[in-house]
Length: 623
Image 1 (cartoon, rainbow, N blue to C red):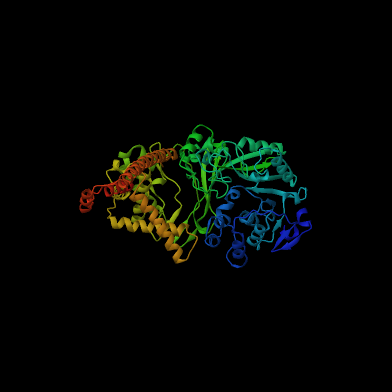
Image 2: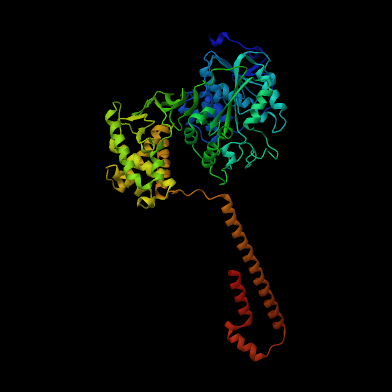
């Protein structure tokens, strides 16, 4: 059905049109971050591609708010679910249109409602070439209570509904009003942070208030927003009348999502649930204090069977009946991070009769600048151990592990007809029941040689091992020495210059894969940044040393303050003593003195008592 033939009760409401936005009324809302005018001007007349995977748009971002509104990752939280192409969608809180754009690419009709006009016009500019999308400036109360939509999308909104209050009433009322707009069998998709997310438990600042442990402690002070635990969030949906409520987990959060989990992942592939998230999760505001290691916290929670309750964000799929929005066999969706449009992929983890598999499908063309990424489907290796983990557990086995890797690499190279498989790296070797399996072999290039791949693998293995364990156990002094040793065990003798050239090549490769900007200056600057970070990790590896906890630093600061206080007290006592001596000298000078004493002292001024006293005072002040 053509979108132009579709309508909704909302589209029939009285409105005016300004900057492509249908203004229902002046709301007075002003949720702004300062990027809106810049984004509107850029989207309105730049001629850049506007699609949801646009590298060109995100490459223009100059600060965090702009990147947030333009990043392709914004839509990943919804890319994880199945949206029917003929769906009629209502979006609440469109913001600057990052998710609106994706919805418009997938659905036949989208009504996007945004209370702040400055943001609504950005969303309208982002979707200007999508005839099925209409952006409205208004609020939920302006939407007719008529069943008109197959899908209602609410991302990052519910937490603000009650102004931070604890009373469930405004949240339930909000959900009820939106439920009334769904047709029979319709579904609501709602994303929100978890009040008990692993990052918050580990000490990250609450995203809305910036206060450590604010949500974990139940918001004891005033807060502009309120998030919920899984149990409380589920109860809100149940009270709003939804018969089926499925809660999924998202990492690092719903904002720039990399992974969405079903509870079944913890039951059928727990190891994936532990290993796929990358820690620490980003801090979008102020950096967190070093209170706890988020990765270790997450590992312990999953091991204790508590993972589903402590994911960083939730994606709720709510309806009055079962839907196919999240297929029953699906355990998780993972999305590639920091890749250009051509190389972006989505990976689906499924459980079919107890057999877990991973399928990678392309989101982009799959090929650019002599590099190619391939789709694949492979079984998940249950209870496997990576080469890296094996080397950390048994350091003396590293030479043999490297030999295993070189053998697997040679075999893959001989089998490949599409170029050199340059991502057959040590961390992609899995050991299980004495068998070695290569996983995630998706990259090919005609530009790299087998030797290039060996050196690349050596550098990255050295980086990973040196981050997690003392390098001296392998007879070397730093990451460079370990990389050279790995090369030797793999049959490639290299000099320090060879390794430095390889590091530069790795930086350029990462830029080719991940840098959205294509101009030479931006690419060169990004390559220098990547090379500097990799060089720092090889020069000064962490060697398994965790960040210094904040309380340790606080203890050192306290000791320093005490020492400073004692020094100030001692200096004050010395000054009091010096003042007393000066007063005594002044009194003595007021008394008559014998003439010969005065002449003697004048002739030998270096020992004149006032001078001695002033010198002593000067020396004390210097100390």
